[in-house]
Length: 218
Image (tube, rainbow, N blue to C red; front, side, top):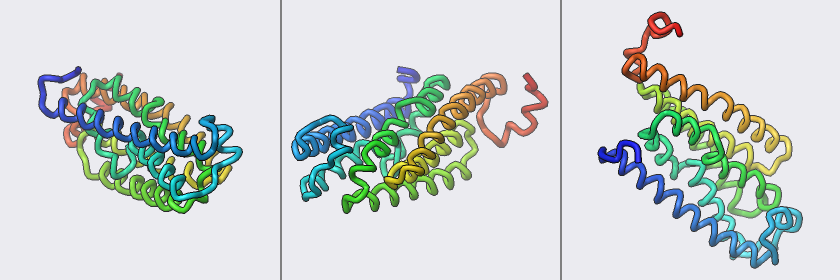
């Protein structure tokens, strides 16, 4: 892949692969258990008639959340997304703005009406979503690499989206979907502009980009 001769790029690619793959396997096991308990694997049917809250279903819900949260880079699975910034700028724009990192949030929003009252749901979703929102924002404020600032901004916004989507509240879910659309529309152009600035100025260091609007007006 891109930059495969660099150790950091190879390590970042492996990290993203391991985190999202094992998260996906956990989600698969969780859905198998939920499907067996509900008698169906259709999400619409499960949401309409959730299975009885047994220990097995609680464990399955946690496994599904592990998969969803790992794919949406929610703490403690959040590091793979900023490290993926070793990829070219168009790939970064797609990764942050499109379906990849939003899929987990969408799944949480779909399942919240059925499982928001399961004992493990709200502590996991609300605590980890809130922690990701705060830690991502704090980390973004401490960095000087423009691309990483945007990456940690995405992590923070994903935490906020998870917080909204996981409440099981209809109005909060609508707000989450509106923000998913808004984030997709503004984050992709931000990454593309960052790539243009990096190409023209030869750096992404904010300390060296003071006055870049005057030197590169177009």
